Length: 362
Ligand code: PPS
Image 1 (cartoon, rainbow, N blue to C red):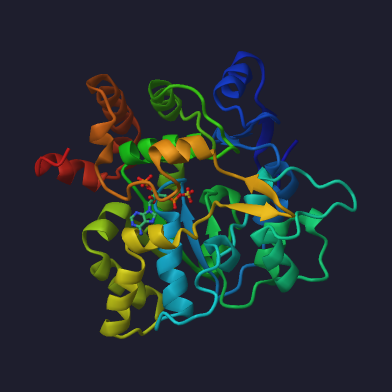
Image 2: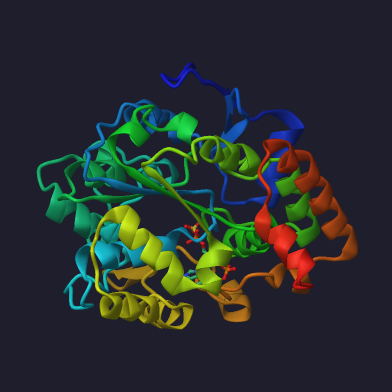
């Protein structure tokens, strides 16, 4: 199958597929690769790829584009608050973030609905869908249609790279790309893949590092995703944020966003947003992208409660450099080799890797 982005869809087969399905027990429908790029995605992507590629963006859209675990949710919460609730008084601010800032490709992970079937009535996504697009058929994509019909200005999340989204995206609207040190991404993604039943990773941490350096994790390859954004970094509609900068100086970074988005917030409003979007406050609100809910007394659980109890939920640690507590010397050497091969070749100084080394943080 050929996509309108020009990519050929190749389903994973043989021993590679077997290994993935053994370690990621949530990938029951298998996985696909898109060539060129070797992008690894859920097979449901084929149903939405062309619509996403041809999506009509508006000038007022703001897209938060990241690879998984780069700090998407944090950035969405900051930007949503700047755009909608600068005085922290919007009545919807406690709703799950993906109902306020929809995730354009999230339908690719949902099991296909049978004709006439509707999602669970109190699934927060479906509640938002019914409110925003009451006359649409959810089988055509709850999340994608939510984005299509969402009132302006829309704040849209994607983990897709530039080559899989609209080729006119940057010339049409503003894009915020968030990047994060790959070693912390590995730790965070490993946790994410264990807590989310959608992935249900049951392999070892060591194997997870290997999956990462082989570019064999879903949404991979990390470096190509980053490269496609880095090559566009001088475009006036692209704003780059590094998770580590946001962590070290949130006010400074939010001020830059204030200029980029032209939101014209006062210093007092920006101070309020820094506090409101701190890790501590966001973890306490716990209205991130994944959640459990009850439907007619039956618990619908996206999260593996046992792992959450032992190792924490979606808002895990929210720190830079936590990888030092998890990596062995061998893993570090493997990741460094990967960094050397992929990121140095990009002409992208992964400045936090370098700076952190200099000041002894790593
Ligand atoms: S996802 O599921 O891919 O969209 O995840 P994403 O939101 O990109 O990344 C989740 C990590 O970001 C951390 N996080 C934060 N860090 C600092 N401050 C705030 N406010 C914040 N909110 C979320 C979250 O805890 C995940 O990182 P780890 O290292 O696992 O804690």
